Length: 232
Ligand SMILES: Nc1ncnc2c1ncn2[C@@H]1O[C@H](COP(=O)(O)OP(=O)(O)OP(=O)(O)O)[C@@H](O)[C@H]1O
Ligand SMILES: [Mg+2]
Image (tube, rainbow, N blue to C red):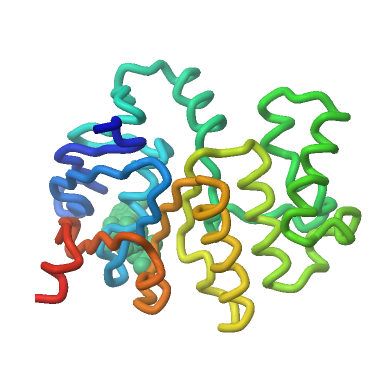
């Protein structure tokens, strides 16, 4: 058996303290195989975003572990953790806003700039991903002037700029009309099926969840692991 690209064991996360203490995750163990597509499904407040942030190494758990290709994230220094995240992961989160005042291309190449890539290479890579998402003609537009669906495609382009192995999406179609949402979904599944990118998406939309290889159900910070158990 190959090592899972991501795995967690007994993951816990507590917010606040004293009377404000809230156990958002209560022992989550999960394995995600390379190239899989996984929907994390649950009601509002069930812990979906919390779990995704921990999987993406954007936050640290209260207890338990996250392993990336068999490496325990706790064994990595902050610098190596940042490098691993930048090299391996792409993010399509609604709260990761675009800078509306700068161009579409500048938004897309920002992660490459942070990673230290030179201007010329950055531009070439940025234009390549914009072409992939049929946005090359908008490269010089201010990001603020795009439609909602176009903005979400720019967010995806930015997520792809680093050539990630894992794409994390949190309600990627939540703010879009159903037709535009479908286009964005199709892009994500194309990346998974034809480009081998592991896709991990938070959603409370059961129609969207049904398109994934696998669904992981979360309730009150705990997993109900299988589709079968959920149906029962
Ligand atoms: N920084 C925080 N401080 C205190 N409580 C928090 C914090 N972040 C999240 N929570 C609580 O933890 C629980 C899980 O939050 P989380 O954002 O993971 O839910 P979610 O499943 O993504 O919900 P939604 O579908 O509404 O986005 C919620 O009850 C939330 O109120
Ligand atoms: Mg959420």
